[in-house]
Amino acid sequence: MNLSSIQPAKGSVKNKTRKGRGTGSGKGGTSTRGHKGAQSRSGHSAKKGFEGGQMPLQRRVPKFGFKNINRVSYKAINLDVLQALLNDNSVEVIDFEFMQQHGLVSKNDLVKVLGRGEWNAKVEVKAHAFSASSIASIEKAGGKASVI
Image (cartoon, rainbow, N blue to C red; front, side, top):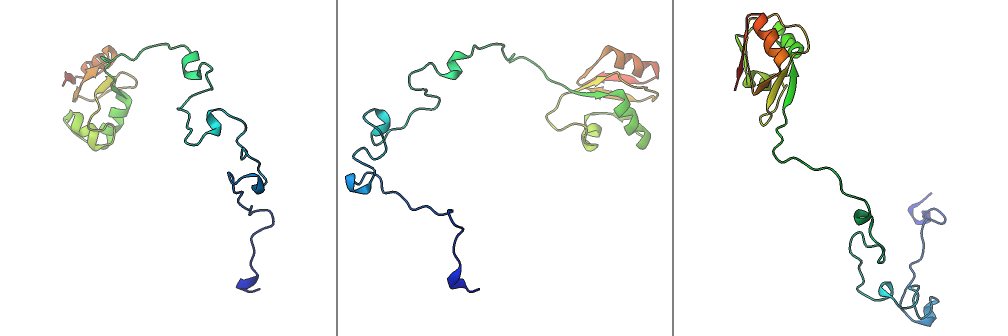
């Protein structure tokens, strides 16, 4: 085998058809574009979603729902997750920086502490919001829940 004998696979390469070169090209006078209409003209480009005058899909499908611009979304963290962190680290206060250092939240998150799991640490927990059950669990163990 030598480089001069290498060829592409049979049928993988097609010859380019020269459209718009008259009847001698074998494509006829219309050059495979059909007769008249916007698509037969040069420079034609239909706008996105155009369906030939038919009502487009994005206008046929009804709108529903709304997005509340005043919604505040919190990153939920349960007490059992914080308790597992406390078992590994001994601290007096669990605050936003502590959660950020341990990968629970990112810098723009708002944190809400939820009450799933057992809580048995006498520690102050600082967050943006608390559920009623989490406040009860923290205070029952002798800790304090502080809203940032």
